[in-house]
Amino acid sequence: MKYALLPGLALIASPALAQPMDHSMHGMDHGAMDHGAMEMPPPPAAPPPPKPTEAPAHHDHGAAPSDAGMPSGLVGTDAAPGNAPPPPVVHDRPADAFYGAAAMAPAEAAMMQAHGKATYAKLTFDLAEYQFREGKDGYRWEAEAWFGDLDRVVLRSKGEGTFREGVDHAEVQALYSKALDPWWNLQVGIRQDIQPKPVRTHAVIGVEGRAPYQFDVQAAAFLSQRGEVTGRVEGTYDQRLTQRLILQPRAELNLSAQDMPDIGIGSGLTSAELGLRLRYEIRREFAPYVGVSWTWLAGRTADHARAAGHDPSEGSVVLGVRSWF
Image 1 (cartoon, rainbow, N blue to C red):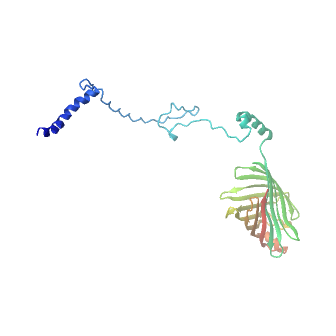
Image 2 (image 1 turned 30 degrees about the horizontal axis):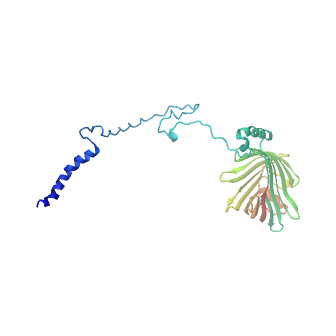
C-alpha cells in the first residue's frame, strides 16, 4: 500500500519542484524585473486629411514650374503646365556616329542653304485609249507634266481623233500652279488650240484640287484673243473595289458665252461627257483599263453638228492605259 501511493505523490510534487528549478537555471528574478519597460508603445495617430488646394488664378508661362513647389498629389492635367524643351531631333546621318550631331549640324545647315528647297517632277498619262465606235474607231489622250514643289509649272495636253481622218480636237496648256492650301491650287497661264481651225489662243484662269468626299475637280475659264469666253468643268472619283481594282466615274461639261459658228460651237452648254472606266493597277505607275464613254452635243452646237452631217451623240467602248513617271 505504501509503495502504491508513491506515483501519486510524485505527480503532485512535480509542478512545485519544476518552477524553482526553471528560474534558477535562467537566473531570472521576477521581483527585480521592470514590467513597464516591456510594454509595447501605442500605434501612431493617423495623419490628418490633406487640405484641398486651390488652382492659381493664372499661370506664369514665362517660367518653368518647379517640381519642388508643386503641390503633392497633382498629376496629369491637374498639374501646372510646363515649357520644357522638346527632345532633340533624331537624324540618320552616319557621320553622327563618328563626329557627333553637334559637329555635323553646321555642315547640314550649309548644305541646305547652298542647294535650297527640293524640287520634283512628274509625267502622267491619265487617258491614253483606243475608242471602239459605231462606224469609225478613234483615240483619245489626256496628259500632264509638272515641275516644282508646292508651286509648280504645269504643261497639259488633251485631244481626240478618228483613225484615217486625223485629229478632231487638240490643245496644249502652259500654266503656273499656286498652292492655296493642302487641297486646292490656283492656275493661270495660256492655252493654244491645235484643232479645230481656225485656231485660237486663250488666257486661262482656274482651280484644281480635291473636293470633300475625295472628288478630283478641275474648273477653268478661257478668254480667247478674239474676246470669246468659254469654260470647262471636269470631275473624277476613284472608287477602290480592291487594293488594285479601281472604278472611276468621269464627267466633263463645256460651256460658251457666245456663238462661234466658224468652229461649230454655239452659246450655252456646248457638250457633256460621261464615262466609266475600270482599271487594274499592276503597279501604281501602270494600270490598264476598260470602260465606256458617252458624249452629247447640246443646243446650238448640236445644230451645227447636224448641219455638217455629224451625229450629235456618240457612245464608245474604250481600252487604254493609265501611267505615270
